[in-house]
Length: 379
Ligand SMILES: NC(=O)c1ccc[n+]([C@@H]2O[C@H](COP(=O)([O-])OP(=O)(O)OC[C@H]3O[C@@H](n4cnc5c(N)ncnc54)[C@H](OP(=O)(O)O)[C@@H]3O)[C@@H](O)[C@H]2O)c1
Image 1 (spheres, rainbow, N blue to C red):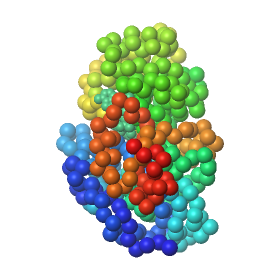
Image 2 (spheres, rainbow, N blue to C red):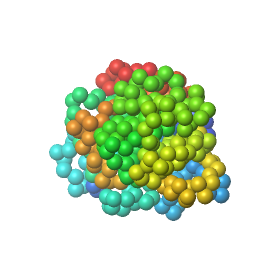
Image 3 (cartoon, rainbow, N blue to C red):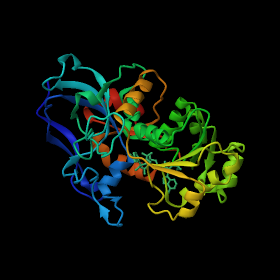
Image 4 (tube, helix red, strand yellow):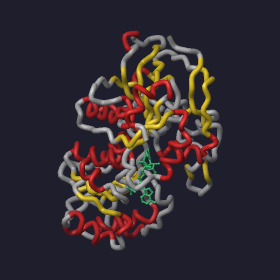
């Protein structure tokens, strides 16, 4: 029986964590044609939740924008329920959806796709930004984007930790740069959601990942598949540090999530060995945690034929491939821990403060689901 009202965290405007308001009287949405109502059991946090809350997506003229507006107009309105990477159970179906889906466990492909194309996603937007997401007890999503994942070895919080916001972005970074088996790939921000996804996906593709990280994370990152781990806090000469840490391999591509002052030295790492390369230096960038501005010499970019790929989300085809890899056990969740939905402020502070042992994902569990789906991973 679906209730009329639910608990949810609403983002009420841009600003501090006081803009996140926990309520228990939010109307439960109803599925329309082609949609399913999902009873949420776990939703992973992403850095984008913080950026949207703070209004931190800038545009070329340096003005701050408060929303993705890639499709032409801003899609964020308040109040908005955030939370992109939703795991849960189908609780009801809309017109045209097989009622047999009720009870099915699955994972949301978080995109608000602008069209049906499987090969390209030109106007990325997502549940939790342009439409309500999973920091709630229920969410309505397209039936076609709620992918069944039975795997009994995966707890719901672990399934949410495998969410598309990180994994699809990571896969698209690798695909954009045409990373192939046997290539060596340097991954920045390696301990985060996208970074840990990149390490695993490199291995899934047969490539060799090398991690740039900080803190006490080497053992975990090696356990995920990193062939070497470079502590970014200890580096003054990146070309030498990468050479020493990797045993002198040529870095074929860089997957950059931090930007700022780190991007140029990592391009240097690739251009320093032109005579030994088999392909052009390639860099995919999908985040700028270390700074949104990087000064770059275009002469160096074109003379050394550096290929730079901007990446935002990924495609329907990549989502399907990832679901396959989740089902067959290729990908492992990197779940750092869980918080109750009503404890969202503490979760937000924990995420932003980021302790030195924090690796992977934080997952939010509705209070009514806590004993079953949250308590065993509690932070
Ligand atoms: N374009 C897209 O579609 C898309 C999708 C998802 C995420 N993103 C962006 O990608 C980035 C990573 O996302 P995420 O979810 O993985 O974030 P995350 O879980 O918060 O991880 C970010 C990691 O970056 C590293 N880092 C943070 N500040 C840094 C700094 N000043 N210098 C160097 N490294 C720093 C840290 O790793 P270490 O301490 O281990 O170095 C941190 O763990 C974010 O900027 C996010 O907004 C973009």
